[in-house]
Length: 108
Image: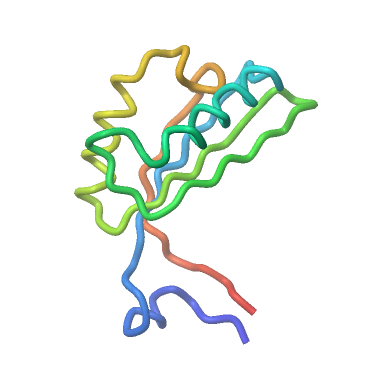
């Protein structure tokens, strides 16, 4: 049975997800960025995150980065840090950014 996130509030808190889409992403730049993230041992200073997912479509040269947060305030504070990042620290050209509240999460 699948359970909606709003029905699981007693089990876990709602979460927030910053969805960042990138274009002009090549494999070499992606690998460099992933290595830098792994070596850092955690998020940048000022970022309190509960998770990170990086998706890469090499054929289309695009990437989607999902940054998870416990609160809207944490997401907003992190956005300031990420917006101040040098473009060379990203996998490509930032195409869009969405600040979302998780409304549904399906789990078997």
